Structures are given as structure tokens and as C-alpha cells.
Amino acid sequence: MTSSRRDFLRTAVLLSAAVPLAAAGCSTTDPEEEKAGGGTLQKAKDSGTITVGFANEAPYGYTDKSGKLTGEAPELARAIFKSLGIDEIKGVQVDFSGLIAGLNAKRFDAIAAGMFITPERCASAAFANPEYVAKSAFMVKEGNPKGLKGQKDPGAKGARVGVLTGAVEAGYAEKTGVKKGDIQTFADQASAYEGLKAGRIDCIWLTRISLADLLTKHQGEGFEVTEPFTPVIDGKEQLGAGAFAFRKADSDLVTAWNGELDKLKQQKTLLPILQPFGFTQEDMPTAEDTAAKFCKG
View: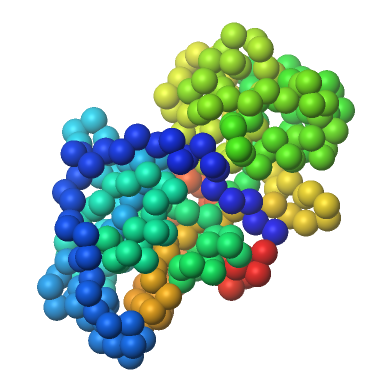
């Protein structure tokens, strides 16, 4: 079973002015032609340009202070599409919840947002193999005074746990013994951090990747992120696998993408692309971590 990306992302701010926008209907190829390999991929190669949908969430995809679209997904897109002979990426930055709908409406040709692969999403889009897998972690005060290291520790030690509204971690906490009264929800990472700083909670439970990015914004303020762990709920590991998504008709594009991604993995050059955004070897997928595996749930 995989954990899905969080519902709170639906409230992400639209940053349409920060990136170049492409007109809706950027791809008008016939679905049957796309299946035959003469669709989106060939069109992008011929023009040297492809349109990609991003969401505004660090460290996956966001605009930096200079207005540049960056993050693990945009940088990976630049590397792989360039290797496919496509030098220019036109970014369309939209709300996370509108990515798959925009993809299928042909507002863009691919999704690059570190989106988790889930069975529900696989029914609507064709996912590439994952570029990372996300484990859980806690953000705690330096020194980890309550000794929170794994999923059972918060409940066993009476810790107050901060989670995000709509996040899977709320269910994890409850199923691993945390009392309902000790689970506090927050609208976003910033408010959860303020809750931790004010002492209203003892830890924030999120993916290690998200917490590592949050920590970079608060260096020297007396907090740390624990070592990652994989929750096991109802006997099943809860891993989130982030990947690019394409229209189902674009099987040739998915195959080409996976081929280039496999090269990066085999040559051990995937991590250097993602590392500047807080990703570590712990987050790298194994050969068994495929889109097919996570689509099954």
C-alpha cells in the first residue's frame, strides 16, 4: 500500500506569473497516433519543446527567489528531456489537485511534481517508474528528548504529535497507539513548525524529505529530523513513491522516459541531481520499486 500525496496541497498558491505559460491544448495529436509512437514524443522532438505541469511545493517543484522554476522534479525533467533531444521545457505551474486533469485536458504533456503513485491515480494517468521513495521521520527538539525513533514511540511515550490536515500520518499515529487528544492537525508545514516551536506538540510526523526541507528554513533554531523509517500499518509497509506522469496514450513517451531514468540509476547520477534538494541515498528507489508495483497498491 502506498501513501498518497497530501490533501492540503490543494490549497497551494497559483504562481502563474512566475513561469512561462503555454496555451491550453498544447498537444493536439490523435490518441491512436500517440499509441503508434507518432504523437507527443515525436512532436516534442521535432519542436525541441515540451510543456510540463508543476505544482508549487518545495523541494519537489517551486519557483526560487529569482523566479526560476526549480526543485527535484524540474531539474530531473531538464536532464531527461535534454537526453531525449528536447531542450526547452515550458512550465505551467498549477494547483496540485489540477495536475492530472490538466494533463488529460492537454494543457501540458507531463506532470513533474514528485507525485506519489497510487492505484487511484494510475486509473487516470500513466506513471513512469519512481525517482524517489519517501520514508517517514519526526522533527523534534535537538537531542530528541523523548527518544522518538520509530512509529510506536510516540504512542508508547505519550508524545503529542503534529500532522498536516488530510495527511496519512494522522491515521498512522492513531493506529500505532497515539491518543486522539495527542494528535494535533495543522494546515501546513509552517504552522506545524510554529506549534512545535511553541511546545504545543512534541514532534511533527511527515516524510523525511519534507521535514529535511523544512529544517533548512530553520537552521540553528534548536530542532532536528530523526533517521527515516518505514511505517508498517495493518501489516503493510507505507512507502510513497514519487514519479512523473503522462497521458495513457503516450506509452512511447513513458518508455523513453523510463529508459533514460534507468540510465541515471545505473550510472548513479540520479542522486546528484536530487541531492541539492535534500534527497539522500535513503530516498533512492530499488530495482523492485516500479510503477507497476505501486499502481497495485
